[in-house]
Length: 127
Image 1: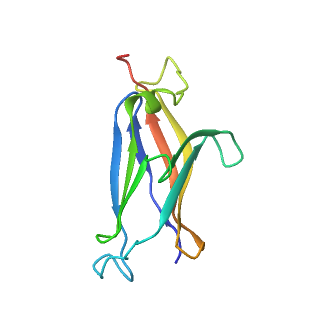
Image 2: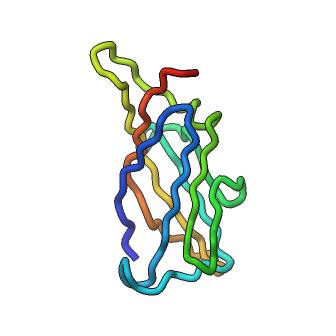
C-alpha cells in the first residue's frame, strides 16, 4: 500500500481531532479491518528535526475503531499550544508547517506508513 499525502491544519491551542477511514482497495471499497493494529504518528519541525509531538495508541492520542476501519487522531489544547509558530509581524495569521507521517502496525509486527504530509499550525492569539 502506498502512503497517501494530506495536509492537516491545526489552530494552536485548540483541540485537534480527525477521523480517517481506511479502505481495502479504493475510497468506496470495504473498510480495512484493524483488529489488533496499533498506530503512531510523529510531528516534526523538519524530516530530520526534533519530534514536536507524538501520537500513539499506547498514549491514547490515537484511537482505532477496528471493525469500522477508522483511526481517530486526538490532540488536546495543551498539546497543540506547545507547537511553536514563527511570528513575522508582516504576516497574519502566522503559520508554521511541520511534517508528519502516520504508521500502522499489524498483529504480526508489519509496519506500514499510510499517510504523510504537512501539519500546518496557525498561531493562536487567545491564550
